[in-house]
Amino acid sequence: MPCGINLPSLGKLTLSDVKVYQDSLDALIAHSPHLEDIHLIQPAMFLDLIASKVLKRLTIDGYIDPHKGFTISAPHLVSFECTDYQLEDISWRDQPTLESAHIDTCGSTFDGETKYTEMLLHANKLALFGLDIKVMLDNELPTCSAFQSLTSLEIGGWHLAEDLYAVLRLLKLSPRLEKLKLVHDSGKGAGADAQPTNGMTFGCRLLHSVTIQCTNGDEGVDKLVSVVVANGVSLYKIHVTMTYREYIEKRASELEDKASVAEEPAKKVRLC
Image (tube, rainbow, N blue to C red):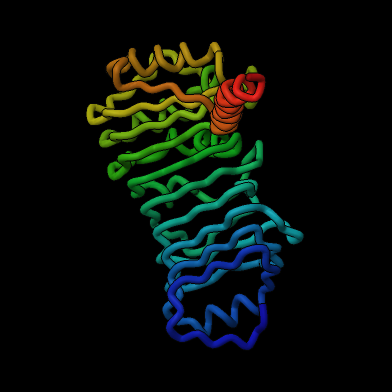
């Protein structure tokens, strides 16, 4: 990115497969007073700071980062999406009040100073995935206020059947929740460090849709369904789906079968 960019009317910026340096980004933000939306796709980020007083939406999609860790200073940010970063690599200055967030992390621990739940507390839509998300929620939810605006929640990316504490605690704090998606990964986070959930319940009276995403034939799904039903959710509101990768593999197999069947009449014609 060159430093000499002056775009006074720019509202949205998308950079894909681009090296992003600190001086260039600072200059672009400084000369784009209406820049409210930045989307970085597979960036090589040589950054310490993303700072803007007007930025409302920030998306960082993909991890190509030769410089570990950066800080975000955007007090008016309402939407944040981030994929393939460790949660502790992202620090915040002037913490915003987010309306929506989609965070899909690649870390397994979290020992940062940022209070993420304070930023997420007033969101109406959350998608939170990863083991370090679980660790963060385990630590912060016991002293957290209720998520009074939250209506849609997607959460998981670890072995939910063996470690449901963060999920149940968050559901307990979300009285207006309408849609829930649980992403169960039987290969991540199964261990003896799970916090006990004996007697934990939730009362999401407005909940009308629950989706459980899992691998085909995973025995842990039965436990997840039982927990949801035990908290007053009708079995007819629960949908179990396979992972996206399994869906693609299944569809590819079905298409191959259809192609084979379609070839049979043609072979018979040629034989005749």
